[in-house]
Image (cartoon, rainbow, N blue to C red; front, side, top):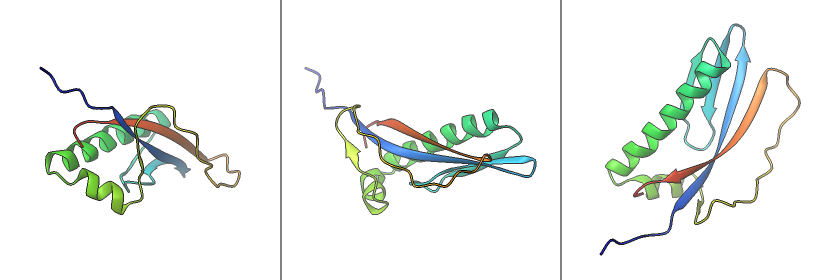
Amino acid sequence: MTHHSKKRYIELTMEFRKEGNLWTGVCKELGTATDGETFEEVTESLNEMVFLHLNTLEDVGECERFLKEHGVEIHYNEHVPPRNIPMTYNPNQYFNRQLIPLGSC
């Protein structure tokens, strides 16, 4: 018999900025960051790095501790009410809220 546990999710905030000719991307909660020449390149790279970061934490058994230390709440369904992201208008800055499923963490 297979054990089915509830799916778990975390909400992460991705911040993208254009600085000169480069875009930077930062996951606010994890501190994961990258840069690149295009918004699309940085978005794809940051998503890959976030999943790698989370998978590494899971592999070493530190995921739950790390998330707790960084104030990241674990949700047990995918219908999470949106958080307000305080910001001022800046045409070279973009925020994206993502709900990320957790593996065995």
